[in-house]
Image 1 (cartoon, helix red, strand yellow):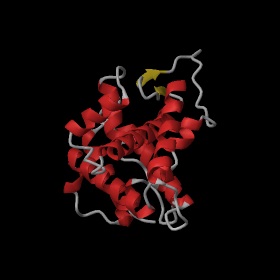
Image 2 (cartoon, one colour):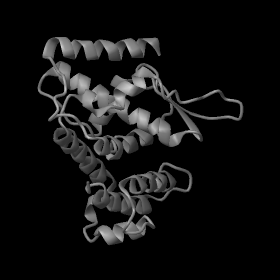
Image 3 (cartoon, rainbow, N blue to C red):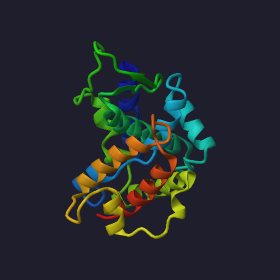
Image 4 (cartoon, rainbow, N blue to C red):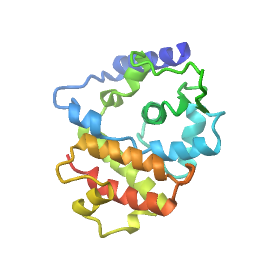
Length: 229
């Protein structure tokens, strides 16, 4: 973990020193955005880890996602493209770690990413005070405005939805999507995202007793509901 923390701190210092990146008031990301916007790389990364639970590093995982056409070029400058790619993957890994815990343990280290079962006496605990986790789960460190981050995540989500066939479902509106989630019209953004994650983990085709068609329909419903403020 020491290497990871040094890496994150070094990146932060590098961009502040060389590019002067400091979020202005107009760039600051809202609390609602921070808590609601989900990184769509969660699901392709989960698929990768289910098929090969260990032996991954951030750069090999990125290369695999690029090969699957799920991660486009993020910046014309090579060093900034590398930083943004690493940030998005680490952000997704930390989100995924929280989603899978306590049934599974996702080890999040830049040079050692592994998905492991949690046995009865295993000593795995999520450290909420980990500075590396704090760094990568704050979207303002991506060095972009809320609109730019939203556009990027929408692009990622469209790519993933296309890969599972969810874009072919055109008849869903908000009411139908909420019924699929078994939620009422009064459901909050937090409740909607919580339900999406629960259902996605339940029906993901790489999970035990998962169902690809059910997951495809749920993806389409989430695509309707996630675009609301």
